[in-house]
Image (tube, rainbow over all chains, first blue to last red):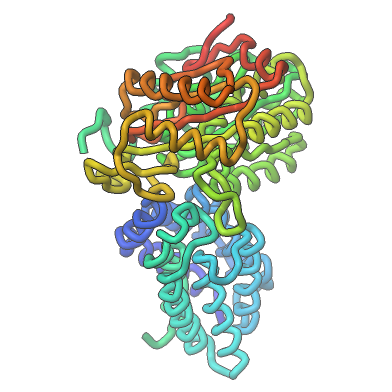
Length: 209
Length: 330
């Protein structure tokens, strides 16, 4: 089960992990983008944690957090992560506690929203390359009968592998695409921050580390 | 890093404070993040709104005023504005006949303006959007986010602004903006990268004998490194790239734009070479603009933007304008 307290813990852990890793995200973004990813996401998740205090269900927590990201981040990552959380929320029943399978399906809807808005396909060297394998692993694990903590742990690992797999890719979306072949050899900063979001979800769901 | 600032995180609000102090005819709303014309929106006139990351001054706030933009929303340095800001600017520009969003083609700008347009639609404000993508250094293919919006944004804002001032409708203004974009092409070079205040160091490093060709305006590196050459050689590279992408003919509007850290004398040297190149290739420069208009903080380098004019576009370019950065005829 995934309850309101865990949803709040997810956003709070995301804020902490993004802040702690802001310099690394910025470093990755300096190599193939414009070097503001860590700072922008830190600002966004700080705003998000302030907006979720009164939320009564996972759905309202994630809607409030997503709206805060859209209103405070700017750049591409604000609308994209905001849409990820808001679409995830929209696919959840408005109950104080939801099942693992419901969460997995909702997160899949969130990733579909990111694809729709940003137009990225697999292998374009974007956040989708971490988000999609994570959600697929989560659904598979739940389908295999794993409990939520174990399933989310597998999702977090899949996100890491997906992000690492962006290193040799040539970017086809976002600002890194202007570099053409020169974007190869660097991990995508959006995929790297998506890893942090799933690490935070694993922590919130009580996954074994 | 040495900059004339108070604190890196205050660069955008402090810039707006200065703009407000210098131009009482602008309404500068620092809290909601937009700059608008202070004279009341004329009912019946289409409103023009643009915006984007800060660091490109005078773009866009410097182009707010009679005959050009009605409102602009500056984001954080090199970061697009958020939808809330864009909606606030759209409301400030709405005179009941719709609002044209002029958006530079960057993923962040496009996504935030798209979300803002949806929110404005909820408030029954008719919004039409034009995406500017004139930078021929980026191959226009499915393998990139598409060509970037750079110098032609100034042409689009000026010409669509003049048309709106004449009382044209939203769709006419959008069509003219699209036409100007399609007739325009740009190419930029950098000799030294700019420094984002919060980063404290240049976005990329170049050796003394190197230049970055096809550079963007956000400290992102360009398509390739090249050897430093003479102004004549660099202009030839830029003009050939432009001519290859959009063959030049007829009468041209040419902008030689400084990136923020280039002496005006060098921009004139570049313009002399552009004029020679055009003369050799049998095309006429009918209008020109030389100076810092679409900058990249303190980047050293320049961009060249060319638009193939029609009789009508030339008339609209010549129409009166009164903004902090462009003013003539009124």
